[in-house]
Image (cartoon, rainbow, N blue to C red; front, top):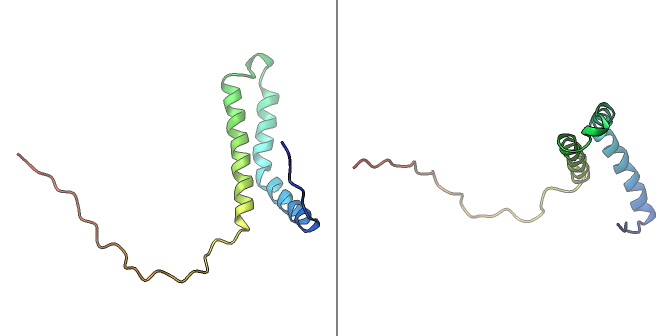
Length: 96
C-alpha cells in the first residue's frame, strides 16, 4: 500500500483526524484485544475470525464517519423549483 504525500497543512489535518478516529474507535480496539486474549489458540479461526473482521469493519466505518463529518454536506446550488410528488395512492385489493 502506497500512502500519498501530504503537504504540511494536510499533515496537521491528518493528525487531528487521527486523534478523532482514535477516540471514536477506542471501544472496538479494546473489544478486539479482549477477544483475542480471551480466545484459545485452537479457536482463533472460524467464529472468532468473523468476530475480528466485524470489529475491524466497524473501525473502518467509524474512520470514514469521522472523516466525512468534517466535509461540507450542503450544496450551494439553487434549490429546484420542481414540485414534489403528490400523495401516494394506496394499493387496491381485487376480489374475483
